[in-house]
Image (cartoon, rainbow, N blue to C red; front, side, top):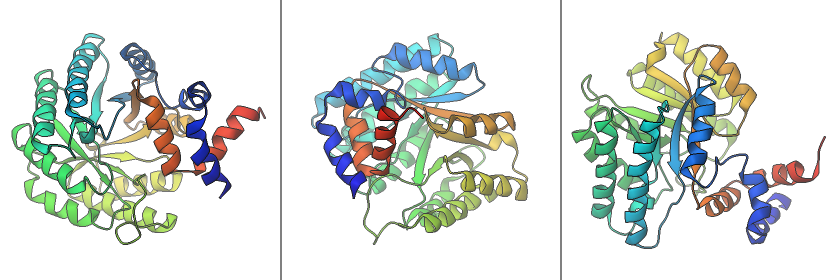
Length: 303
């Protein structure tokens, strides 16, 4: 209850106060910030996926602006020689306003990435977007079979079925490419698992289904039991190291991240940037109130 109270009131604090927390997890407001952080991570043998913050836009003018920002991001990232790809949220391009306009914008971005031998990851958002984002992935993958991937969320009841259905389009020339995460959005119990042990169990079941079907997977977690479980599955199916990677958020569990890299596994870190950092940060607080207590400790306790 205390965490929820703190999380609900923090968004009303001055932006400078919230930035004290956010700067740990967001590279900055500008593309230069994203390039600086990405280059630093690359120097540590870590790949990146770069994201322009902003989601659930209100009008299609914002969608056009976001598309142009991504096209420029691809150019700048290529020019800087960054070892990384790109993540995007379809609601940043009007998915819930006009799905065809959204498709055209993202199609242009994926085409740009493909032209420089790069890759776009379609982030999964809340359950109102799940069917639309799977449809979007199918459409784009048909034209760009190796330049686009999708995120799936293990806490949704439907995820195993979604994987099984998508296997029908999984071929050597057009392989599936997923990021598997637990899921962060608040969803009702009727469609999402709620208990920690239950979510972890389904995460590993989904991961096993992917690995045994030779699907490339980004194992996105900061949870040590899940990482250990992933190691066991990689060994069980003798998965080559070019068929998976571990993924983490910028600023989260750096020691655990370092251990994975030192073990010789590919690591990719999500690097968000942009002027919409305040909305991103406050939404994360509402979705995960436990973060609030960590913020207070970080700000006021120096032990």
